[in-house]
Length: 82
Image (cartoon, rainbow, N blue to C red; front, top):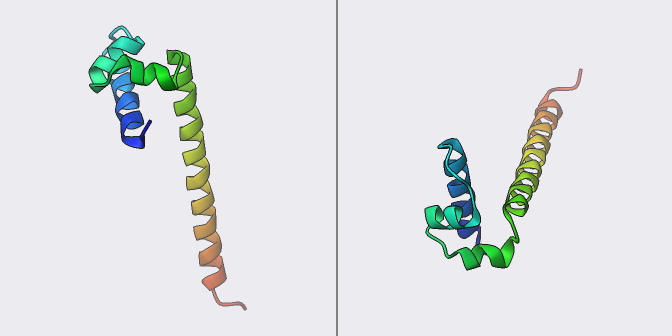
């Protein structure tokens, strides 16, 4: 599954949840404009989709945190030593 397809899937899932609509593989596929078989090939159920997104968000937060920490170190290293 391409990243664009995965992103469409996740966006559709968030939209349905925020609208209070029934969430199923079929409803997510319909909203994302995807075949439900494409989703089932990668995810056996909705829990797997949500878990995958949680893992991806956690990884992104870790990367963001690492980048922020590196920026702080870069600033400290550029300060004159007294």
